[in-house]
Image 1 (cartoon, rainbow, N blue to C red):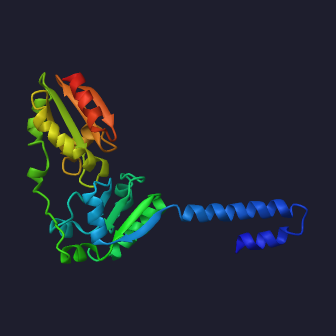
Image 2: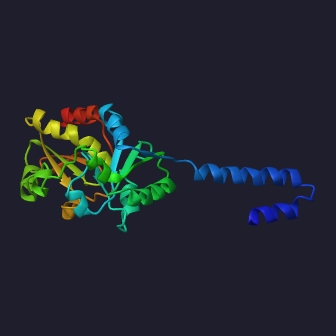
Image 3: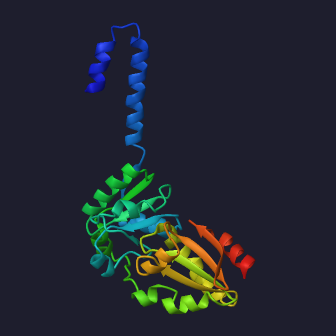
Length: 253
């Protein structure tokens, strides 16, 4: 309304053509900003097709922790949409990677999508009917491992002793809600076995082991730190490809 009134006041001046162009440009710019995200509903069957096709997607479960622990879609990242830190955590995900969001029946996931759309996520998919319909259609769900089984590192004392030695130690600082961390996890787990003679790997969840995150000043995830003889020999903040991570391990082993 303000733009229209301002335009009407100026349209009789000699600058009218120029002002008209400027106002129309502003309106078009605002419209483009508001519609920068591609948002659509997706059925359980369509979602399964994407998974089976190996499509690069992020899966986001926005239910409560209790709901998530009762069973979730494989490889889903958990961030509760009703928590105060939702936007801070979801901001760690890749905005250019297609994201499928789900909750119990579809309401909370729509709330999350509305927020994520404003944050600049390019492609957002709301799972129709949520995990309720997913289960009804007999698609698989999985429950998370217990905390001791979820992380590669055994305990803090083992880690602190290991970094004092001459063998290379890799600390993978991550979090359950971190999308890039989830993408790196499969080959980090693989390297734990295939490169066990070269490096000892610890996956350290910074939400669980906050004291370590503070000690090593971990402000962004994922963060990879390599140790030898109680010294940091390499550090990387952010996502690393399998090839890049393997190359760094080979360089410092």
